[in-house]
Length: 163
Image 1 (cartoon, rainbow, N blue to C red):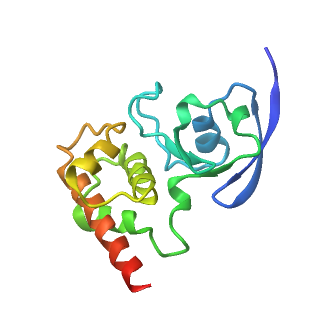
Image 2: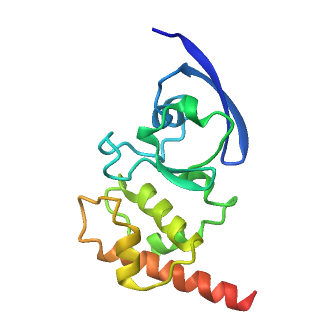
């Protein structure tokens, strides 16, 4: 069995180095070593999306990523979306439309929505549902979540038209 190793990466724009066992999951390093508890564990098997984070701009399930694989990468978690006191438009929309219930799936849903919108996604319900298909919510019928993403898509489109 191997002992702890140093793992260095950038998290939410800040350089970080942690000591962890080589096969520690990225999810556990983020939550336990860095205190970034916004990233949740739902299933631990990569099926629910609650643990989603961006690694070098790609949405991944952090429960499936060995932390050692993240060496040298740039990681963005739910905590990194807000800029100071200004929430990301998707975060604002989830609050305004009531897209959050118990909160377990919310960070992953928000990051999946951000990924969808960064890739040019629109406010169409069917497209939003497809984009969120890898994220499970056990509390809702997804209507408020879809409404939240549509609201954010419209807000981002308005902002782009005026800038």
